[in-house]
Amino acid sequence: MADTKQRKARRPWWVEIPVMTALGLAAALVIKTCLFQVFSIPSGSMENTLQVGDRVAVDKFTPLFGWEPKAGDKVVFHDPGGWLPPEPAKGAVAGAVGSTLSFVGLMPPAGDEYLVKRVIATGGHTVACHGTTLTVDGRKVSEPYLHPGDDSCSGLDFGPVAVPAGYVWVEGDHRSDSADSRYHRDDPAGGAVPVADVVGPVSAVIWPLNHIGTA
Image (cartoon, rainbow, N blue to C red; front, side):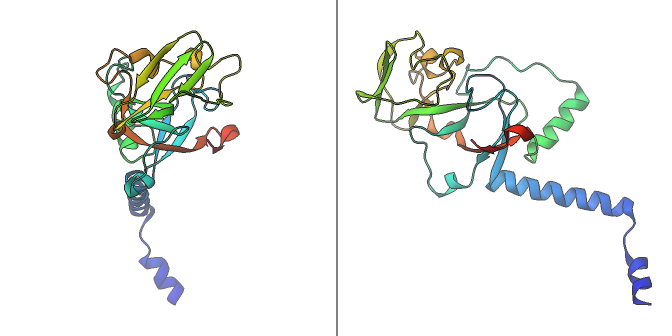
């Protein structure tokens, strides 16, 4: 009798599915807000560390407790202004679905006005690159992560550049295919990115399956 009552009391599937979907979306929103957010890798500027099309999880938890970017970190940051080309227009339905999924953190942010680069220097430090040698405060930086065939300068000498307090200097691992801080030295901050624009550090690649792992 008890089993019969339980079966009768169970909600019909057309009620359970929307309820479970809503609960799942709410959980995803909490995770996105407090723990992790998903971003896509749109270009080859971080190869071979990160590949085009990779989905990466960015840690939003540690910044809540005072984390700040340091040299060597791979970080996602909001476009400081003019670093990215205009986003192509999407259809109404695709745009609405994408916006909803990005809002709860299951897809990259709508508009995707974010970039991923490696922090080279932080506020108060001086960065320069001449020949094939990158230096921070006059000390050579070892860069084993560089794309095969690239060197630290890849034909673009610059500096010394003083990074302002509250900013970071960022460059891509595929140095010859990365329009990073080096190419924005005419910006107000001389190419540096405000720490306030940094979402957090890249924690892991979560897609595709053959590239899952810590980044």
